[in-house]
Image: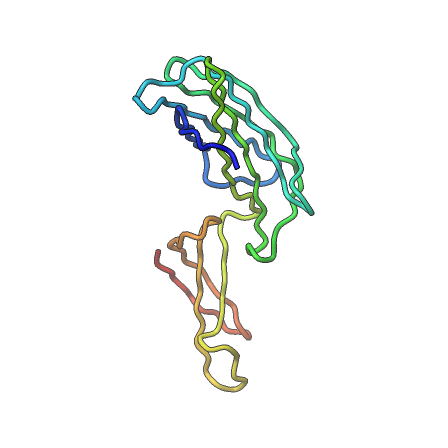
Length: 171
């Protein structure tokens, strides 16, 4: 057991997009601020990117220094292939481990994950009950969401058993 030491400053991470596709450039910025309000200028920033297959494996890293506003940009080239998780509807993710070291050698760390997906929309169609009834009318629910799980408004056509149905979802 170690003695708890209060952090000296905060570390916030923002990516330019909420999700990415394999092979894209994931970029963003790290912002560090002392708790009394002053930016952590001149701090060393290390961003390490990991993908998950059987275990986490680091595939890229980026280094930088925070500017006078306490901000350091980063950019990571994502691999062309990821292993998705059946528990997460086939989505994969990248884990970013961020380490910020200020001029006094105080170290703060933060970890975030960002989704990596093949498509920008997740579409699910499922019956109202737990099964379909052959020869009987069945009702279905259509759910369209973004990769983070937020519902999105969408319209389209569902083809089912030779029939065409116009559909509209709400957010």
